[in-house]
Length: 317
Image (cartoon, rainbow, N blue to C red; front, top):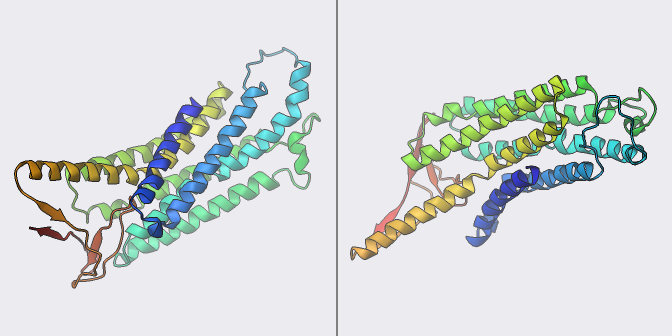
């Protein structure tokens, strides 16, 4: 299941990067692209840790009261070290997709909406603080003897097994997700979208809600302690869905191209010829910006406070 989720997430990342390369838009690679790639590499590290844990028998069910085998004891230290490393790939690593999404927000939220822009700065600071606190908490919880995380001594400190660390990390992760999710809602009332764009937006927000839901399901599973193997799946599911949310603009570009080709084919069959060009010039009404994270260029003209006009230049021969 984990590898299926991983493959799906990587497919969307590949689509997004592939669109830029295929359309020769390397010069427009933005910070969110770089952060998305880091997110994908972090996801790879997480699934390697989980696969290694499975190979060493760390996910095998051991009935209560049954003693550990010699192989289990031999692998115990290695498994504890893997668990300690996976803290960084999941707890801190979950903030890479968040950072990629915030970088996209900086590209689509105009300066002519100062309140929303100020909210973006506040959310950015909050998410950054949560990421730093999470990393420091996972690192220093058992300080100064960090090696106690993989000690065989009875009652040794372990960040991975600490319920309090889990609760603090979960709270910061969940609240930062909610803050990022609700931030762009004030922008939506200023957008005039067609049906396909509305469907795409709904899909994006649905996946955003799914990320929060999976995060909550993982937390409940750990709190109840019923199925620890499911925790690994929930962790990968949350990471994969978060990456998908950031990668979705690539699908929008591909669908846009498909629709454009379909319209062009119909026009040719009817004996008409249409030439559509993307304007790269600044509008006389205001400042033009490249805002489409999927690779296509959109010119937004800001006229007055909290007003956005989207214009396209069409030439008909």
